[in-house]
Length: 187
Image 1 (cartoon, one colour):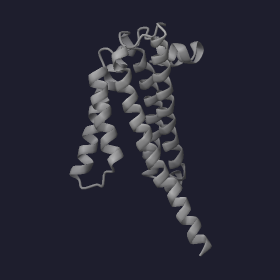
Image 2 (cartoon, helix red, strand yellow):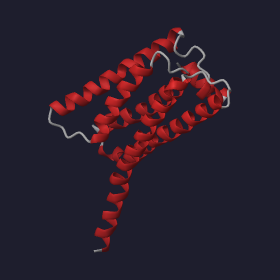
Image 3 (cartoon, helix red, strand yellow):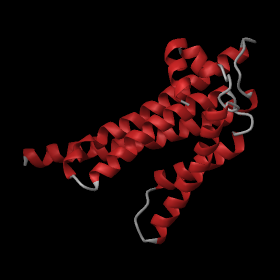
Image 4 (cartoon, one colour):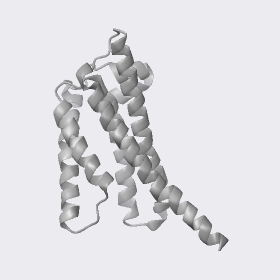
């Protein structure tokens, strides 16, 4: 899959969003995409395990993992070029996020970076929304974009809902807590 990261950087936005190439069918990238799709089953299973152990799970957590699993299995055969953009961003963000969680289990000093993890997730959804709108625009003008036009609205709903829910989480976690700390300092 690494060759697709390099191609995205060299060939730019149009390639990243609208060119499927051999991403789903290449020997390594096809296998990587298949494993990525299966990994979403594990993420939902992990959420269920947390719930069974009595851990508090916020709406964002189970909504995100349930909907992503549905999205990847529903769109896997026909998603086309949007799969490359979404998968690559998701792999980067999840690498950051799970590295943060792993380090946070052994060192509390890393927790000051939690805001950056959430910002990376928000950026993923903002870029995803722009990519979907870009693909829709190209298709609407009759230009080539190797993605299923019937899935554009579905992907937009998912990305917009994730952006909304993660933005609400960000505001509730980082902006409100900072405001309450400011009020306590004034007292």
